[in-house]
Image 1 (tube, one colour):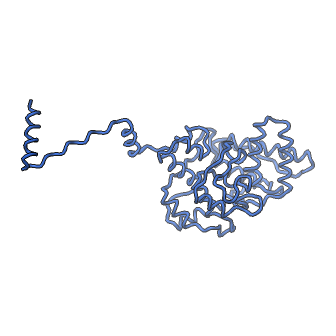
Image 2 (image 1 turned 30 degrees about the vertical axis):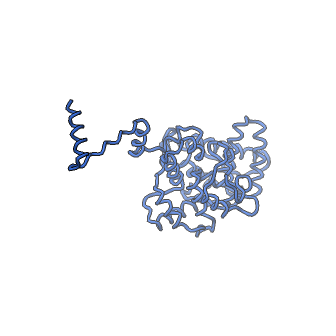
Image 3 (image 1 turned 45 degrees about the vertical axis):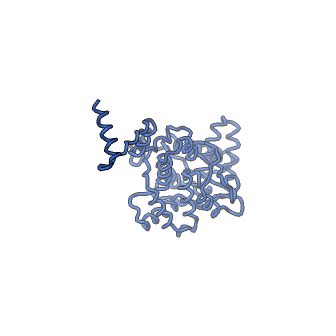
Length: 328
């Protein structure tokens, strides 16, 4: 295991077709739900990461394990590696040899390995002004690879969608230039929540900027290393302190939406949460919410009567009468 971050290569036709053939055989012998999950592992993670048969090396598999364990549970990663082993076995049966052995996960408790029930690192909620400064400071394209980065982060902020979902968006399946909604299919959503997501004007502009003329990925060629490097560089340029990741933008957007007073059901739909209990984790207690809650259940106080000005006959007379009445 090298300990370095692996740079992704372009997906070759032979690996893509091999995965497609294996998945066709897999669907014929497994339950529909299981086959759909394995298909998602392949299309969203394994195929984009490795790209070609010659990328299957012990070092690259180790890099894949280290990267994925930071964002998924051990149980999920174990299933992904199991799918990769089954694919390798299928390849051997069909005459492809020389593939490496997929190692098991290290035991929980080893350095860099989360325990089975450990909580994922929580995101850092950033203020909207900080995010706006980041986007202004970020170049349109990555200086390292030339790929679109500002449209990606603009879309991430405007929609609150997951990084993996955005990287899997294709045209025209998910978006056509000029559309007002974005289609999220089951195969690119972590929760397998198929839906049409309404778009802001800024989100539509970002999508139109990257929408290819020919069918294909909207953010083709971009990888997570490029995204993180671009975000870190923009943070330095904008003077935004502290560690920052693409997930922090989703977390910040989710927190903003959840605390805006909007219905949680609508916020959950946008974020891709099937359960409101997940969305409620982004709601933070605050004094403003407390005042609004009290105002919803307490009747309005009656306005006090105007105090009569001293020296006026009519006002003095009314005041003396009111005083006499109070005395009785």
